[in-house]
Image (cartoon, one colour):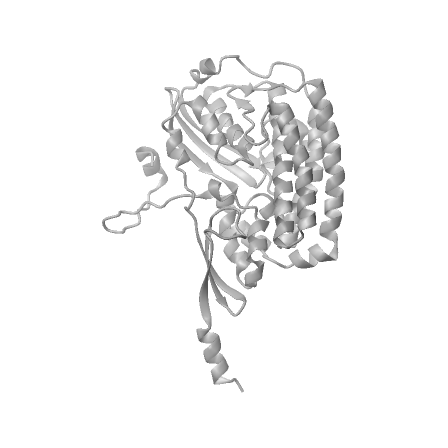
Length: 401
C-alpha cells in the first residue's frame, strides 16, 4: 500500500538549485538552473551570456590583419585553431595556397595546442574529484608544453603563429630537438597519468556519471572528445583534412569509447595524447624545405583578398570549429559567424545531468571541457514589447546582425 504522505512529500519536495554564474566549481561563468528532489537532478536549464564580448561584431569594424589578433583572443587555449580556421577561409576566398612547410608547421602547433588543452582538462577533472596530487602532477607536465610554445613562438598562450599565406616563425634544428625531447617526456608522463585514471579510485568516481548515449550524441550533434566518448568517430582531421593532415593521415587513428560517461570522455583525451605524439613526430620527420610565407608583406596579401565568402572548419581540441567568413573586398569583413565546439556540446549537459546527484555536477560539467567565453551568444529581444526576434540566414546576411 502506498503511503499518501510519502506521495505528497515526493510531489512537493522539489526545489530550484542555482549553480553559477559565479561558483567555485566553475572555471567560467554559466548559470545552471537545476531542479532537484532530495539529491536527484530532475531537470536542468542552461543560461549563457555572462561573458559575451561581441567579437563577431567587433571583427566587422577592423581590417583582416587586425582581425587575426582579435580572433586569437576568443580563446587562449584554442587560439591557433581560431586563427587557422579564419585564415583558411581568407586563403580560399583569395585563391592563396600556403607552402607545404607552412602547412606542416601549422599542424605541429595544432597538436601541441591539443596536448596543452587535454592536459589542462585532465588536471581540472582530477581537481574536481579531490585528487589534488594528480591535478598538480598533470599541470606540471602541461608546463613542458607551454615552455615549448614559448621556445617556438615566443608566447605561452596566444602564439601569433599565423599570417595570411603562411606562418610567422620557422622551426630551427635546435627547436626540433627540444620538441622531440619534450614530446617523449610528455608521452612518458601520460602513461603514468593513464595508470592513475585506470586505478579504482578515479575509475569508480567517474564511471557511469553524465551518460550520453550514441543516439543522443548523434541527435544533439555533439563534437570532439564528447562525441568520441559516446562511440562516434567524427574527426575533421580524418573526415576533411586541412593543413598537412592529408599527408599525415596514416600517422594517427581516431580514438573513441562506447561507454558515454565522464570516464570515457577523459580516457579519449588521454589516448589522443598518445596519437598526437605520433603526429608531431611524423610532422617533424616529413617536414619539407621551403618558404614559410607566400610574401613578406602581409598588407599586400590582404589587398589580394577580393569580395567573397567561404566556410572553414578545423578540429580544435574540444571538437569541430566552424567559421563563416564574408569579405567586403576592401580589406575588411561584411560578416563573421563562428560556431565553437562548446556551443555544440553544451546542450548535451541536460541529458548528462538528469538522473545524477547534485555532488556530481562539477565533474560532469568539466567532462565536456566547456569554454564558455567561446560559446556565449545573445538573443535579439525588442526591449519595448519583450518580443524575441527570430531571423533566418538570409536576413542575417542582409542585415549583418
